[in-house]
Length: 315
Image (cartoon, rainbow, N blue to C red):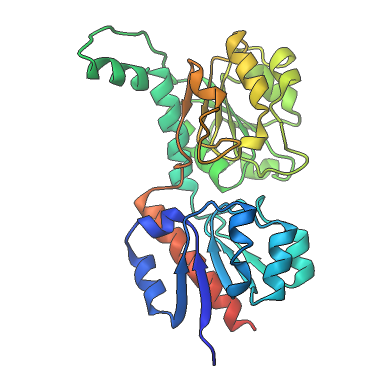
């Protein structure tokens, strides 16, 4: 029986030694490594050589998948949760199995939400730079205690955000049409809202935890920022860049419609020299590291490997 040809493109997986590396080494696979996220023209050149890919946010477009299917490709094992970079309809049509790692990174990402929020409200990011320059100019911060946080999307990460928010005695407004009131009631100070208008009107902080779909694309847009945000909120995006309209965010900050934008995701990754958000005060950007903790890399990497193993066993 021929060895399985497996490509690994996730840099988090590759750069973090741990038990997932040990598990990978135990498999009788022919392994190759590329550093993603790979653009269409990069992955299409090699995709037909592999039976399976342990992938990050590479561009698995129709052209890529069609070429892969003409070769050896049978499995895409997403190291992570979001599948918006994979044309799932085409993959299904071609018989390419797609797996991901649901419910694996909620602790790391939820902690990152509050790390960003506390850094912003306490001016940690700017005060750190100031002190490194031997300045003792002190800024006034804000408490997060007792504020209202709006959570859009109440999957595993949204639930963990709500749990942490309890420690800060925050009121939690939840918008997710796919989650029942009975689930929301298990979280102290949490309330399900039936429409986004209520969440937009009442939230001091708005954090995004929904998949990027045609329905959720630009869920935060110019109309929302101009007309529906009444409390000058801080917007936190650790999910997908496409959930917000970047130009609307820029206009909102410049016109004092929003207090800040804290994000772990950008429209173009790695960051471009032309990224306009970098130039703005009241913006914190981290380089897509919300799930990049040692514990989560090991757990997520292990699940991604096991998903490949399980797919092969099912054949």
